[in-house]
Amino acid sequence: MKKMQKALALGSVAAMALMGTAATLSADEDADLIINGDMEMIVRTEAPDHLDGHLNMIYSGWTFRSDETQAMQMDDFDNPAMLFVEQGIEIFNTAMGTEGNSCATCHETPENLSEVRAVYPQWDEERGEVQTITMQINECVTERMGAEALGWSSRDMVNLEALLASVGRGTVVNVAIDGPARETWEMGREIYYTEYGILEMSCATCHEQNYGNYIRADHLSQGQINGFPTYRLKNARLNSTHSRFRGCIRDTRAETFAEGSPEFIALELYVASRGNGLTVEGPSVRN
Amino acid sequence: MADNVTPRVRVPREASAGDVVSIRTLISHPMESGQRRDGDGNVIPRSIINRFTCDFNGENVIDVTIEPAVSTNPYFQFSAVVNETGTFNFTWYDDDGSVYEDTADITVA
Image (tube, rainbow over the protein chains, first blue to last red):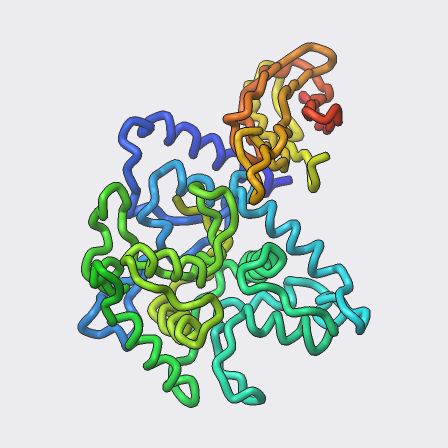
């Protein structure tokens, strides 16, 4: 009850704030993100050590969005992505495949997996490779449930990822970049700083050297992925990390890597590590 | 028939007489505009929620005509003055004839 009142109070504050600034559509880069009135997020913090000489501070993409878009993520009722989390819960509890298992058979509740989102991608000893959360889900789906693997950016997969992100909100991103994952991480870093396409742009061109500036009408963020999967207002659905990578590289007018390719897996690990210190805030709302 | 249509409402549970309360509603619905074509070039038929109403103790609070340009999962936020304990009734009307309903009680102290 108390929580509800708080959430409503927040909603009306957000609405009043909107009325005051509707004309400017400006981003409030100094705002703090508190979800449902009680879940505090870290949207700005010191950059991790490996970014020495590149960035001093890291910022969640939330800080670059307009007041209206920011407000949508401050309350779960207003966050359109939470509808997909609900669908994710349904999938979580539904048995798939030949083994008659659902996610719930082993994991019981999504909340038991609240620590997962913050530490993925991570090295998988058994397989001898870096696994993203998508690969880990598909390992369960194919091996423990005996079902067909879900498509990389399929609706069911992204909904499950949104569920895992939502229960992990507030945990601090902390992907490991040392040990056996180092080689993959270095490959990801290489890709991050490689210029692609006819426009000859790297990830760093926009997201390291020009964040905070505008590229045409778009306010450039640091390209952090702590808020993924992301509900985008432009397509009114959840977007996976790899489909966003594709979109960026396509916009440089290059042939892109495929979703789930070794290149994108490496890039996901590297980009995730640039956000070490921010909180998991998916499913987020972006433009 | 649209899939996964679920109405949701947020109304404060308590208020003082004469308070203006904020009401939020959301219904998950694809809101197919009727303007799009499928992979074979055939028009995808329009399928939207075309009307939304809210009544409080039998008295109408809001009555909205919804057109195809309204986005997927339509969300409405509006205010109402409550003078007495009672029930808000929410109704959504689908193009396919389905009617979706939800209610919320409020206690006026």
